[in-house]
Length: 395
Ligand SMILES: Cc1ncc(COP(=O)(O)O)c(C=O)c1O
Image 1 (cartoon, helix red, strand yellow):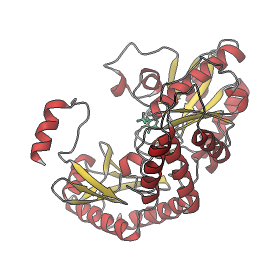
Image 2 (image 1 turned 60 degrees about the vertical axis):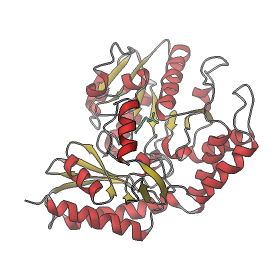
Image 3 (image 1 turned 90 degrees about the vertical axis):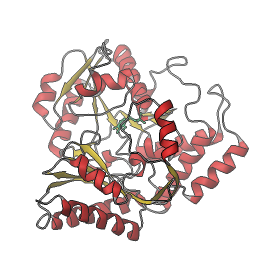
Image 4 (image 1 turned 30 degrees about the vertical axis):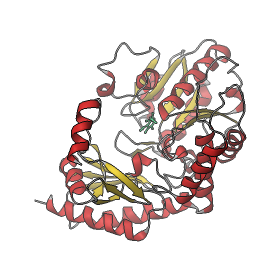
């Protein structure tokens, strides 16, 4: 493994802080490194492997589709593309789908769609309000919408037309509305920002503001989507349907795939030539997406995420007495965080050394994003590593 790490050091950009490990194999919620060590995975590729690693049905789908058809360009249709769009429409409450390759691209498409709608239907309105502490991706438009200066400051000037307001602060959102506002862009649980769920009162207020000022609601469900929070889409928790919805991550199970969905009224403003991308999913990704959705449905994984998530929150709260380093437990479904009284980085590092993959999502919070079908024994093995590590941090 040291040889591989030395080679990586020479040729890869140093754009991400990586653990010094090369993985060679993964199955379910277990991952194996080049030295043969086994790890329990509470990160699942940052909410990508909803049905676990190397699921036999996903692997079989990839093999089958690779021999059938992969890419013909977006001048033509693929059967798998139509079927996946139909399925996503049925599950999301939206009417139309645009496929792309990532969450950032899905949000870029959403920003362009909202701007075109503003130009065509709202008298030229173009401003988008998003939340402070949000995360919408690294491309310039998505980055401009990301309300975190630390991600933006080296890359200015960013596209204009974005405003920010604190998450869950309705008065601030109301104050941010101008006569140019065309859309609000929101995550219902801020993921990269530290797993902060939206409040019911705030979301109700947002829906009222949208109606009152003819503002489009764009929900970024790149991380919350596809069962992660205990519903297929997080908007179902409150029944407040967006005008535009983006999803990615779990949809392709690691094969690049993102989607922007919209209601018919909003989708109708995009005309041929307005927006596209050469691959934008492709046969392999569409077939995998379909199989992912089938697995989520057949195995009732959103409901399992809700059940297991509630159970874990109760468990973590029961640990608080013995482990006062746990200051707060928060999240929905299997999108959870433990706010600690100590820095989270060294805790995640120690977990890694003890064979558990878990993410220090903020300087003081640990994030858990296990596979929605993680089995009991893997879950318990991971929890016992986590508990033992947290014990070491109790002074
Ligand atoms: C809510 C949200 N939106 C967008 C993105 C960007 O997605 P991608 O990394 O696929 O571009 C992420 C990634 O973490 C995310 O969590």
